Image (cartoon, rainbow, N blue to C red; front, top):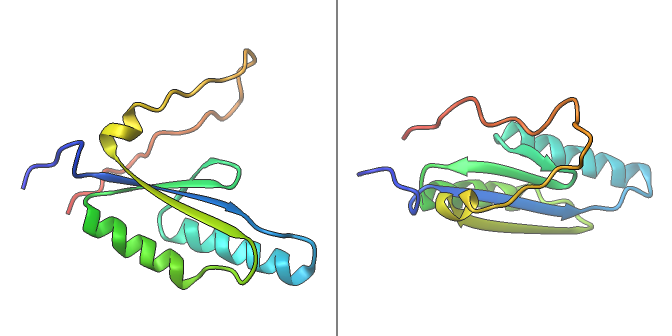
Length: 110
């Protein structure tokens, strides 16, 4: 099977979780750490992304996210093709940041 931009997928996870109580903060931290352990990278605050080799692989990670959803808050999951992800336009302020978003260092092959 050929790898092409229409078969490889990106998962974007958007979340807005409460941090009012100590329990909420623990749930927030647990959710974020689970995303990082599953290979997600912070795109922006509360937006994490992950590259997947196929639609089936993306479904595995989406099911994994569903398994550790926090009890409160909102979580959105969007899956797009690599081709669509490549069309994202990203704008930065005129002042350069010290650590701009890093490109993934490892290519996942199946």
